Length: 546
Ligand code: GLN
Image (cartoon, rainbow, N blue to C red; front, side, top):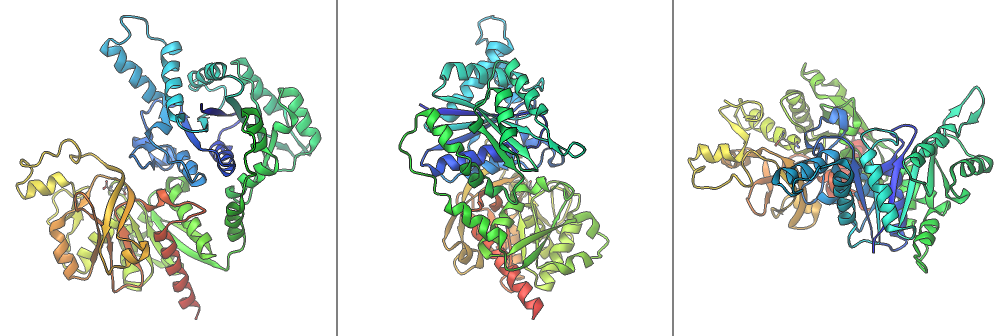
C-alpha cells in the first residue's frame, strides 16, 4: 500500500515548496524506496499548456506528452527512478471538466453535483491512482493555505488522511520565519497563524519546514513545536542554501528521513547514501573558471520561463567543472543589428518559443555565431530559425521563412505538415486529422542519428529518445538544397522521418535540435548535448585567452 506525504505552504508563496518536496523525495529514494510525486494546481486552466511563460514560467513536458507545471521538472531532476506522467499534475480546471462531462452524460443520475463529494472524490481518486505501485507518493498542493481556490484540495487531503490513517499518511507544511531587524529577531507568529489556518480546516501538520535566511536556535524551534503541536524534532530548519542541490543533505542531517521511515514503519532500510549529491555540490562550489553563454530569447526578464534550459546549462557546468554564467539577451534588442553585446559570449543558445516577436533578432545572433565560429545550440524554434537563417544567407533563398509568421513566403522552410502535403496534393490521401493536423507534437519520440555526424558522436548511439513540444516542422523538400549548401541533417524522427537535428560540419560546434533536450537533463547525470556544448564553450574560452 502506498504511503502519502502531503505538502502544503503557508505565510507566503514562492517558498520553494516544490524543491523541498523533491528534496525529501530524493532522500527517501536514497533510502531505497520507490518514490513518486504529484502536483495539484488550484487554478481553473485545464493545464498550463496555454498559459503565458511570463505568468507561469516554463511549461514542463513529460515523457508521455503532458504539458505540466514546472515543479514537475524539479521532481524529475531530483528523482532517478520515477518518471512523471499525465497522472502527476492536475488542476482544478481538469477536475471540474471531468465532473462536468460526467454530469452532461447523466452519470450522476439526476443527483445534485457538489464540490463535496463530487469534486473532492475526483481529486482523491486522482491522488490514489498517481501513487499506485510506489512505496511513497509526495503530493504537493499549489498555492498557500487560506486561499479560497485550494479549499477543495485541502478538504480532499483531510479526508484522505482520515481514510489512509496515521501509518500511511503525513502532512508536511512549509512556512517562513521572517527576520525583523529592528528587534533583531526571527518571528514565529506567521508560522503559528498558518498552522492555525490548517487546523481550522481539520489538518494537523506532522512536519514543519521553516524557511529562513538566518540560523535558528533550539529555543525557537521548541517554541514553534509547542505552539503548533508538532514534535520538536519535526521542526526542520531550511536556511537559504547556496544551491538547491544541498537540500537533500541538509534534510538528512536533520533526520527527516528517519522521522518519515519510523512513522510509516519502514524498518531496516539502509542509511541514505548522498555521495552523488555531495559531488554535485562540490563541483558547483569549485569551478575552474567561468564561461559565458548568451541566451537569446523573448522572456529574458523572467528566467523561470527557461527554467529547464537554465538548469541543463548548470548541470553541464558541473560535468565540465566550470561555472556557466547565463547572459540573457532580449532578442528584439538585436534587431538594430548592433551585436556588440554578443562579443563576450563563449557560446550562444537560442531556446524554444512561439510567434514572430524577436525572431529577426534571434536570427541575427545565429548568423553571428555561425560566421564567427562561436559554439551554437538551437532548441526547437531555435533550430527552425537556424535553418531559415542558413537558407537566407548561405543557400540563396533570401525570403525563406516559417509559415508560423509568414504565410505567403516563397520558401516555407518550416511549416505545418498539412501545408506541405497540401502543396504536393497529398493531403487527401493521408488521414492526418488524428495526430498531425494543426496539433502539437508532444512528448518523447525516437530519432535516428546519421552515421558520421557530430550529433551522433555526441550521443554515442544511433537511436535517441527526446521530448517534443512544437507544431511546425522542417519541410523536407528543402533538405537537398540546404545539404548542398553545407547544412547537414544529422537526425530524423524514427516513425515519420521528420527532421530532428541539424549541424554545420564546417563550424567548430553548431548543432540545433527540434526537440527539447533540457527536459531530461539532471544534476547527477547531465545531458550529452549540453555537456558537449559547454565543452565547446570551454574551448572557445581557452582559445580567446591564448
Ligand atoms: N513555435 C514553434 C512550433 O510550434 C516552435 C515551438 C517551440 O520552440 N517549442 O513549431
